[in-house]
Image 1 (cartoon, rainbow, N blue to C red):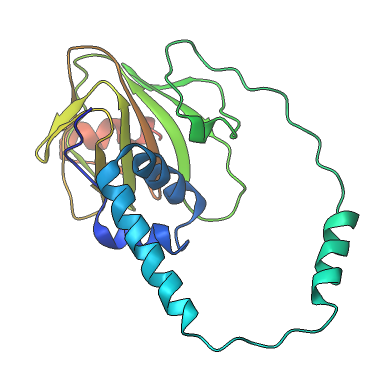
Image 2 (image 1 turned 90 degrees about the vertical axis):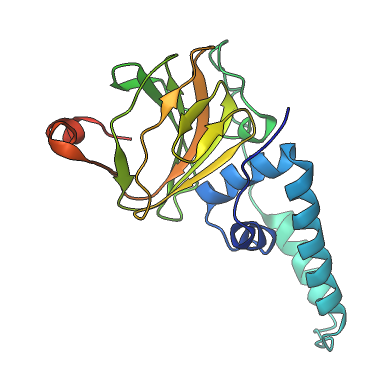
Length: 213
């Protein structure tokens, strides 16, 4: 797998530092898990952070600090294991997603469907799996927030180039694009989004309220 499009370095740095909210962390993390180049960058950031911590003067702790922490762990209520999740056989779900509950597929537009990913509830971004039929063409649009997209299978193209498995695409309110799905098969993407799509043109304004991601 050849990956041509990667997250911006500032986004990778925030990922390494644990500053991303859950939906964004999920999408970037799945990309990093499959991209040697970005994994090396994240590792370098973590090593720099570790070296910086070594120069920090240690703070004294109470003599019984360890015992109190262990007591809290021991007294914590046991968690009931969730039932095993089932996925559509045509969805190639990355291992990082298997700890999440993924909702049922719903149609959002002709040739376009999504499955919401249940998150912890913190943060403003939502995450979902987006499946597009081969050859689908979306109307030109921008975003009222941000959209992080990772291709899991298939491909799509727009003004920024072609995006295949492992490729990462970033969209916000400064970017106008019109994705076209490749004809080789369905395109499955992992998406984290804040805000909504904003369709351009008269037709886009007419049907925009009916396309909800």
